[in-house]
Image 1 (cartoon, rainbow, N blue to C red):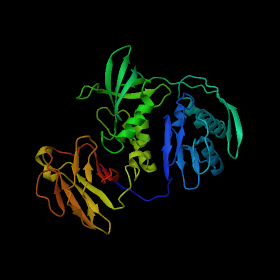
Image 2: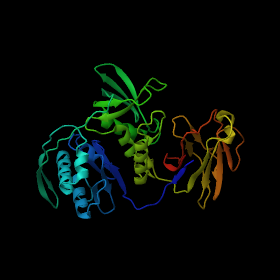
Image 3: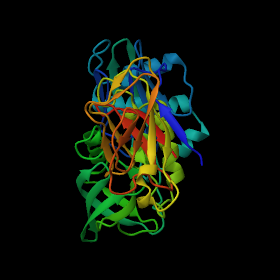
Image 4: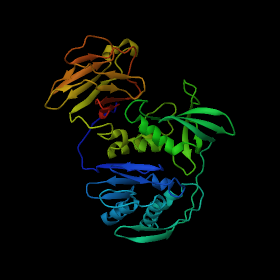
Length: 398
């Protein structure tokens, strides 16, 4: 068994950052950058990162290691409003100039050419003049021709409603209404931290758009929803980009696992960048405590539902002070299992508490969920520890 546990770490990083998937709005700290949705820069946009540091703004392409001077110039050009440095830059002008500078920097770079080649057929000439404080006005024309080949067995549909961050309603082409659950991802449930952000992100990508939908092994789930992967016409893989942006968690649903490896890699990258749900302050000010999920007994001997007390999770307080667990939550990857710690329970400094799935009498180092069935999935799951604001303080994957 391979397991992994992770606790929030202190690292040198931007004060805030976001990945530029083709969203109309990318908010960073006290500034906003707006992008017109266009076929000009789809696949390349999903590899761009916009960061606000204490002393500069950077706009970089994934896989490149640009010099700080052109990073800073990109920051000047792409930001619509930066309170500390610049005035307004028009939406279309900012987008066009950033595209021009990235292409100019990349030159004949094969990686950039192949990235652009993955998007749909279109030729988009862009000509604009942008006056930016302390920057020479720029005029450029950028023709881009790209293609996107729909996956085999695909269907087409128009997105008519966003139910939540991983579920939509569509009008099938040529006709008929369906509800679609995106395969391989899971977003926070309604009312939970980051559920609204996930829904808004998905809606910005999809609402009123025509999408390509593809099934895996299963056609429907137990609720009658179609299980599908989604692509936009410019080649953006919606399921994957929601995970990469930190809006969704990768969750494998065998036998529908065709892209499980890609989703896991996207989640690893989002976690490494501490973005979206993985940011230490995603849901408010972090508590500054050192609580960690260190072990999970997910498959004790015997039938699962007959061994509930033997199924457990260990949480350690590695810090120097006691921690009140009022409003703290332990959960799995599903939407059903949530354990709220007792209001009066305290984890003593340098001690471990074991949370059993079954029933029993709570003590100083043992707590009992008293769930009616097994919580932790034998084939693989994640135990999340959430602080009272909903921030993920620690998680343990197995």
